Length: 319
Ligand SMILES: [Ca+2]
Ligand SMILES: [Ca+2]
Image 1 (tube, rainbow, N blue to C red):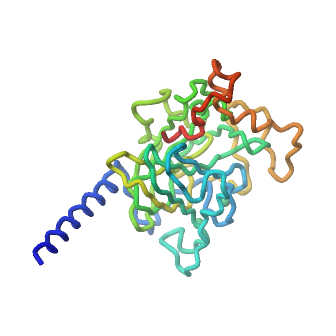
Image 2: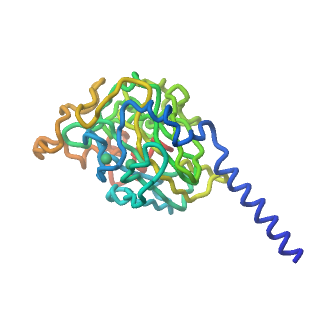
Image 3: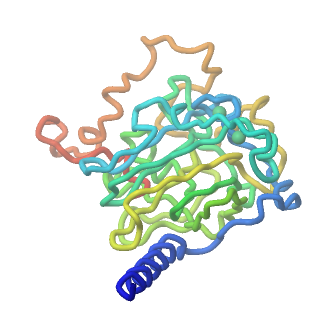
């Protein structure tokens, strides 16, 4: 009996350590999801997943996921898979607080066996006619990112800036693997839906790697939601749900009726057009040649792509 008590004590302290390590991250642990005054501050809804597709509201840009490469990590939905695999159709009559009360869908992302940095779900704000090339837009009129979330991990929300994105991915950064260190902030999630408001002013780049640049809210091409894996601190498995994502405290913007305005030139020349009316494949950039970051960023070895094994910089924004 005594041994059993000791066992339970050890188990309890281990669980406490785990919970603390998972929940002890930085700022912003979320607001009450029923806080109507906070909720009303949403000004530009980017996506609520209720249309069940893999695009943002207005279909100006798409969602995609990625994770560590070359490790045992697996994610669901999988990279390159159908993003809609992660969209959970809500079946309960009342599904959550505030804006989630009449909810239809939310996005569920999970994974296991992290060992390097984790995994990211990303949404572009606006892409060109090919759908491959993100265009920068101006979100400087807003105070920050707002969303609902629940989960068992630390979530890093970052604003992805076109001059920190590698040229191989149609950005303006020419520093190869040093590109992609976006400005963001970490939040500890809980098992209940909570409302999060992350002011841009609290966002910063990760320390210890990458090109350093000031945040420029006029050059944003997307938002990333990253499970941050820290060796010896985080559980290598994660699961989180997100919904009702957008920008708060600023001019009302109806993305279903309007196109976000391009604020900066990017690598892309094609003007954004309605995705239904596109795609003359002859005029579209060959995606095979553009997404190969190895040949595009490493000029020394660019002629011998077979010998280059560096992983894509496409995974770098959350490294
Ligand atoms: Ca929803
Ligand atoms: Ca959508």
